[in-house]
Length: 329
Length: 286
Image (cartoon, rainbow over all chains, first blue to last red; front, side, top):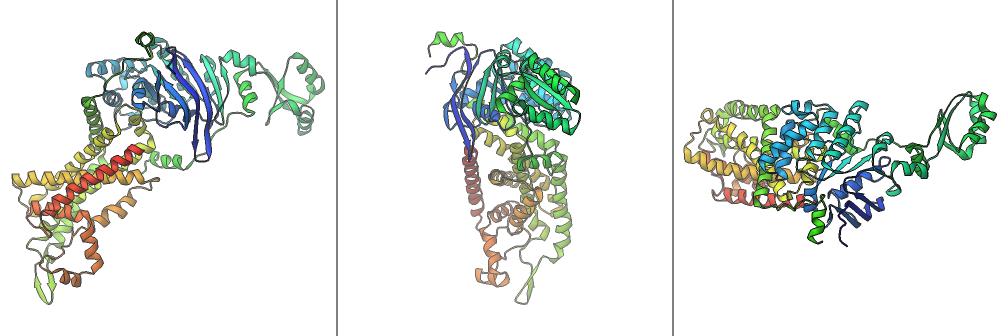
């Protein structure tokens, strides 16, 4: 089958297993050229595995994945020329300067000298790091490092950009700034961007969203379509006493989505709310009615809120290094 | 796919060919990175300077008067050189071993911190990545070997140009082999417990067992040697490839060989080739 020119990324029934865990259970998706496409899912959903397959680090067990029309399993080197990748963890050399990191990238991708210098200058301008080009990367903030990595992924003029959790671990302000840069770059260069994230608020601006969990695609579409198809109104209430809480739980057990200090239940319009207020109006201390949001889509599809991961052995080794373990960087 | 369709797709840039020149550029990029990192690592530099000072100036001068042996009641110098001269070539090897291990550790950190991924998703071949890494480590190790050479006059080793040149050749082989070995070991390590493990488990045993700080008396027959030294020690020394690296450098710098002088360069070359090939095989699988 030949590749379609309008599609930058094609994934057909890709499966991948690590030992006993099935990381991807037959995933298929298509990303059109020039699109900002988000893979949304909790940690461990299989997003990173899919990105790793697309950027040729891992091979799929079965299925076909193509970037820019090139089969990543059959022709990884050609595929690599066309993609830029920003991994979840920083892959910068912290001991080199900002400019040296970009130079290094340009050299290993074989970008001719004059073009390389020009592009590095332009990209540093775009991500607002020109003044920092002589600084060692270790001295930069995490937000700046991320911006630098995004710039680096474009030094070889890649048309397809993979961003794996580009904003994880950043403060709200830096996150916003990263997204501004992503939007600018996408518009200016007609880039195709595939981004993974587990922050719901961030994907509202994306062209299309794909929700994954446990290695499977649960839904795909524009944010609006997902909201109308899978979303619902959420009623959040805080019961006054434990007794009130029990009473509400008993009556609305079928609608309950989350039971923390705050009870969250599905609502289906004003009738339900009026009825609820009629019987429990005096027994709650706070309440909030939410329009269908991506959060409700996510809750509906996965049956849970986005969770966080615990540290594994590898992360502990990393932490050792970051604490200034011996002869690190 | 027909050409009209390719032109219609902006996401498919013209396939750039990667020739020898591009691979060479990539090797250069990796090599340059190694050099820059080494220059900026003050700790490594301090170690590279203090180690030879300790071994040559303190240990060497301190043990110099005692460098003679008593065999069957007859006291004489075991080898016709001073102790300083004797350990000088060995300290060169020691200093290069530490550097090689350090570049091995940088492989581990590159892997753990993710920098390796930046290289692995680039279009350069794995062989080029490895060659750049090993050549970079070799250059730094050579530099650390040269630091020791600066102490030659304190050790009464006279350096002539031919000696320096052939010495550099030997040192290159040693450095290349050791750096490749370091990469092989690093590739097999799943966890990293710190530099101490490397130092105590690999560098120092190899060093002490290389006849670096004590000679196996060449005047003795094999049977006599085994009487003076326990057999296991003699065996370990003879099986240790570093022994021949030290011996080759001794032959070059002070003209003294405990083993057949042809053995050193041959074993060094074989080591360099084999370790590099093993590292290459591991790297392609990674």
